[in-house]
Image (cartoon, rainbow, N blue to C red; front, side, top):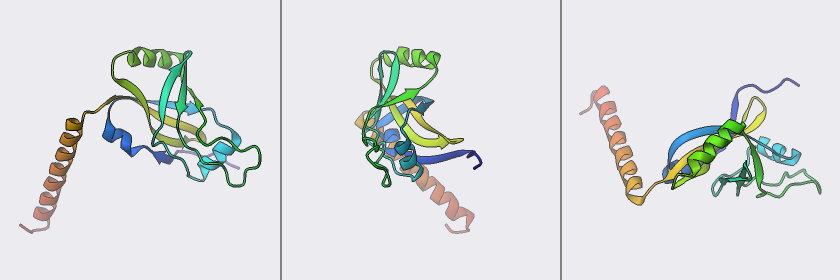
Length: 158
């Protein structure tokens, strides 16, 4: 069987970009069991409440929900177990230094397969205040209105 090529997105965390200002992104591998990989390949997972923590110099993903594999037997996995993330030591050390700043956290943005390997896109992010969220929504609405006006003008309407 030929090896997969390219990037196949399993799930994204759309809420993360709304709640956090993304400062930097990293790509990390995941340590998974066989039934977790099979469940991900069916396209089912959730990153809604997920977050990453540095513990003993290692990165761990908490609260990521990968449902049990339906054809799995007694070897099935726990859907919300803590999963180890794989990054180079330099990246982990750089991340630890940045996380010591106040208000920064590690939030997963996407879970995907890259050339057959399960990966997670982590964001070093700072939480947004409610007025920042309102400003983002107002800016998005204004941009959408401008695009509509340009589209109407292009079509010859007023």
